[in-house]
Amino acid sequence: LEPVVYYVKVLGHVARIVGQQTGTVWPNNFGTAQTGYSNFVAGFRNGAWKKLTIAEVGSLVFAGITVGGFFWVGEMIGRRSVVGYDVPGAHNHFGAH
Image 1 (tube, rainbow, N blue to C red):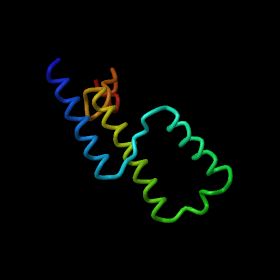
Image 2: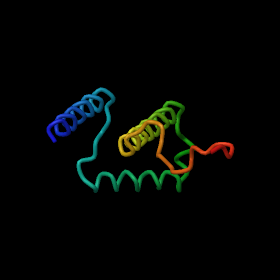
Image 3: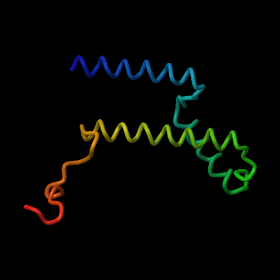
């Protein structure tokens, strides 16, 4: 259990440093996240998304790639494999036995 605690602390420290360097704002409560989501949805309803600059779109794409990357790494950690899940019978290619 000690290595797990150590690596969780290291990951938290690295996340804090990355957040400080990239200027990422971490919501401290659910209300902040809910307000952000409401503003996001309202931006689509009132057409504000049409006024985005290239820099803002690039920033949003980068944020999406970052979230996807964290999800992908989490999936690899969860399955304990980089390649994928071990599916019984999946290695039977071309009908060979």
